[in-house]
Image 1: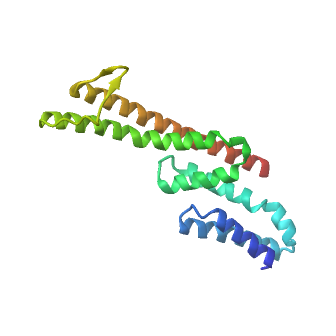
Image 2: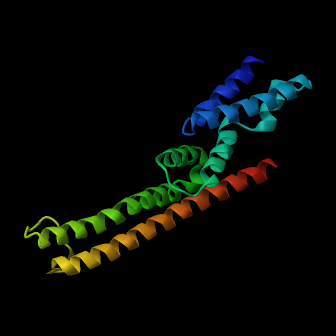
Image 3: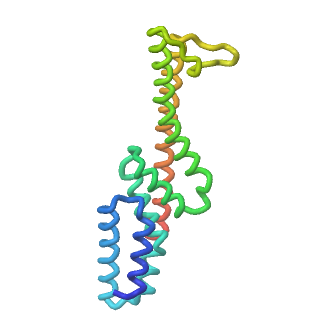
Length: 185
């Protein structure tokens, strides 16, 4: 294996760091195997690199596949989205950060809003007042029972909006990965 091939594989591995170690090792081994087969067939390292694309492009394709494999949210997947975004290019400069960050934020705020209403209502039932937990609409402050209902509704709406934004993030990544595959294929 040539020095160019080793450097190429090291760059790919660096771009794939957000992926689990086992998955990253499998991907690098698969690419290395392909490169060795092409080398054995007499193809020069420059042609091999040209055929596979830049390490950034190749890593972007694998990161995209890892993200869309399962639409479920995880912190590791958020890291993969960040790495994919850094490789996706300027076309998605504003869209991916907005959909991914807002999606995660809304999914976290939804349950917290409902929890605040539950805590406020529970404290009211036990005879405690919690002036720092307030549900206010305009100049009107809701009582504990109405605040509970409204906070649960708002929490559910925030969570659903977050899931929809996360689904949109995954759909965008799929589209970018598909464009990449279409350009390569």
